[in-house]
Length: 218
Image 1: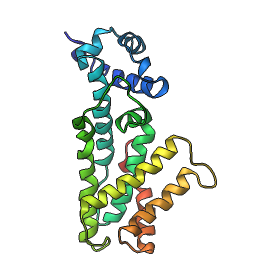
Image 2 (image 1 turned 90 degrees about the vertical axis):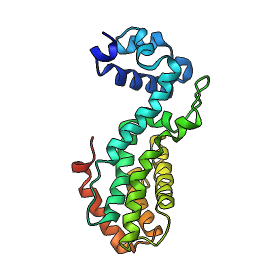
Image 3 (image 1 turned 30 degrees about the vertical axis):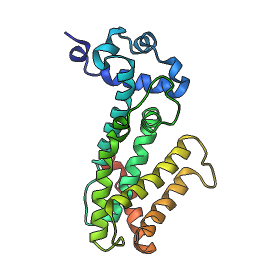
Image 4 (image 1 turned 60 degrees about the horizontal axis):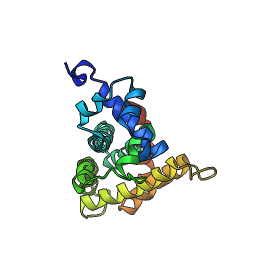
């Protein structure tokens, strides 16, 4: 019986360990012996699950986006699409804070040295953006956002939120402009820049915060 069948958690553990080693020590820390030792398994587990180290690095990216998708799909569609959009931003940030090592690898926050990602790998996670584009379309249809391309709006939301999260994970945001304060202000500004009125945007962003604990997994 293969390790994959005997231990369904082994694959996820190997991915988490490899992502941590990459972000904390760099590509030179990746070896089947080191990963297997930290996982309490044999070196064959890396080959059984991923076909080798290159496959493991690729799987970190895929697993990172799979976890992000679970956070995003937890956001329910309500009669306030702008609040839904703000909650999608909160979901994105929550995932990054919960999985910082995977987040760093999936967006190439460091050099992979001998490990490379193909264009297909880098485009793999774009399916997660469909959640945001769909919500943007609802915001536009409701008249809260200006008429436009929902996918372009989704890209703007992604780029802006990604920038803040990257700074937060790098410990670049501190009082009086700490991550919490800046993020709340940024959510309102994103909605206003897309066409919403400041007062309704502020109310929707505040409402989205009350939904965080019930709709976003921790």
